[in-house]
Image 1 (spheres, helix red, strand yellow):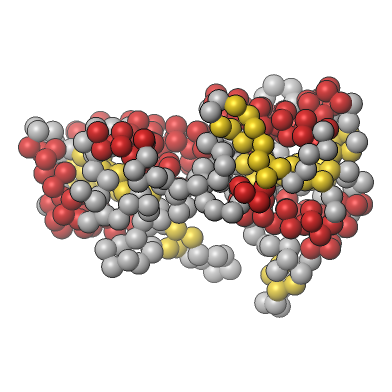
Image 2: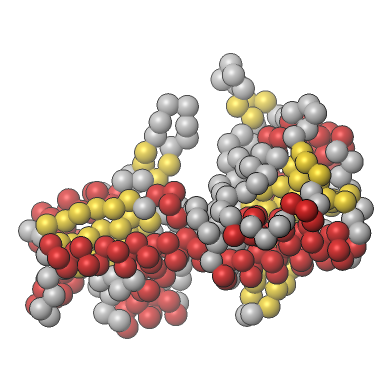
Length: 358
């Protein structure tokens, strides 16, 4: 068996730990060869394809502690509608499939979010190769799994940011706003907000109104506290229902900046002195947490075992303290969003945290 592995989509902490697990299990468990494909599907379009042989000597104990991915990754350029220099879109899917053939890959393990998994699954069906996927995203929005690789580290980073903002907020009698990532899911905001002692948490899944936020801040003042902490998920909308986005020439639009909007509104309504911190890509980098390393290891081992059993078109998942596997089609069929009435949201409300709606 010659096993291919690639990382696709945005980077996050824990990817190298997954690669380590895949290589160790494939070589020590089954005696296979492992080829690492560089820059995701884009690397398979080059000739020769961008790839490297991966042996046990690569993983000397340091890489599992390192953020990012040694293989590189891309979140641009759908091979079924690849943007060309002249502005047109071209179907380059057969080039990707041919790249796998040139590398003599018998099966592929793809590490990515829901978008990457959907593309890889379509390529596998078209090219007839075996595919097993591993969920990774700081947003934790992949269905059928409680955790994706990278999420726990992102939450830890956001929580640490709140730990650092709290004393400066208290020193200057300020309302501190922390804008966090998460795309259309509020998992990072909600969990880090609870862990970091936030007074207000705003997430895309729960509509908010400024009256509720202002009342909570006034309540905090009435309790004798001179500061407040507010966590804002990047995808919440304005009061007019508009999405706040950032864009740069040649790049797709992305969320960002809503924290400043909320800050201006809080200052107008309460008269508070407000400061805004946009955490941004700091959430993606750094040393992976212990939980992310554990999940990465468990996912990598189980993915290789699925290949050995010939069980393809499956995604590994974490559920009820167990590593399981589910159909990729189920995992990409819908996003895993915060349940507004679920246990985590109920915990926040039980702590007196304002979620913007009551």
